[in-house]
Image 1 (tube, rainbow, N blue to C red):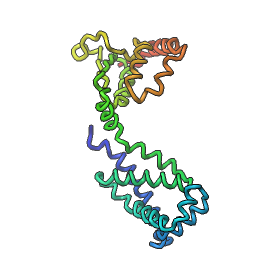
Image 2: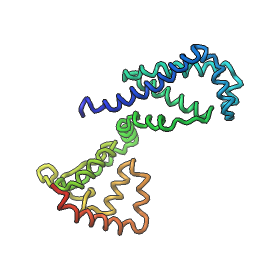
Image 3: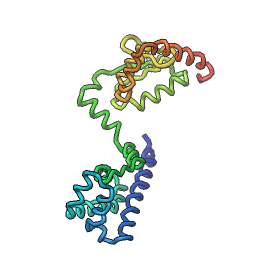
Image 4: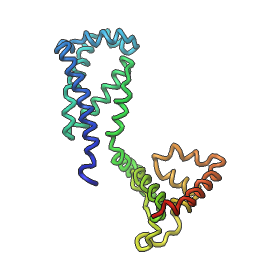
Length: 238
């Protein structure tokens, strides 16, 4: 993978850090360090009137502590530009948003949604698969490398295969793919519903959809879709 592949994510974090840092600077501009004395937070907690916020507002010292932590987090967010500090900043952001949701019923969902992009899904999926022995049960996937829709499907499957459980075999290249028999599924116009079901169970990301493949009528629908792909194949192949 190119060393530049992570730059879009780095740029996104810079924007996220700037968002928090500007918020902290605004607090200092409007109230100075006195903003962290707890009274400002106590006022907003009483204004929102949530059960947790009402309890927290009755403890001024705790409001002061949380106010100082919020200010430290917001002003220190740019430290996450250095990758070794980034996990600490992201954890602080998760705790910050959980606190504002619980105590004030404020949910910055567009910002919170961005946190999913910073989860190391590949590393996490590989670790879980190794710990559970999931990687010991590999599945061979045969596809036609001369078929453009097949190549596109395989590209998606590679992205979903976090545990590196699938072994892809290009039947259009006998020298590389070799003879394929038994214990495999076929991707493309020659596939079937049974193979699609096995493929769904092999990918944890597809598990929520796997039961839907057993709904009556899905086998008929699958045949119709494969037939449609077969008709498009001459125009899409290269």
